[in-house]
Image (cartoon, rainbow, N blue to C red):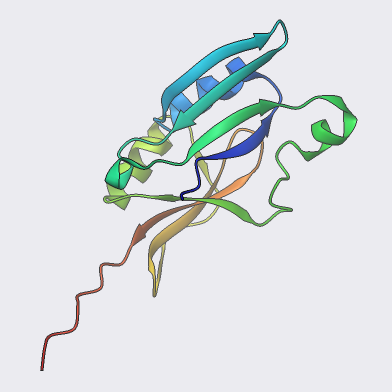
Length: 138
């Protein structure tokens, strides 16, 4: 088993696509109309290891309860974690495309990281995991 999709509430499909594809550099996996007002829209970051990717299902919020949750799916905490193999390259590129980082880069035991917010205010970690060398045999 693997986690295939995570639903992310959005205000508008095209607005969300412009952000995730245009600013974050995700690729459009699928955009299928289901009804005149509902679409199945999947985006994924480039370079998923092992061919198994977890995609975001961009789900247009319907009704007051869902609309109130747009941008607050993590309750103000970091909600999603985007791994990279080159933190400096990706942060620089993201900032150049208008992604808003809300804190400076920091080094943690698990890697290099900073928090950014998506167009709705959901908080994400951009993380370059620390490579841990395997133990040497005795």
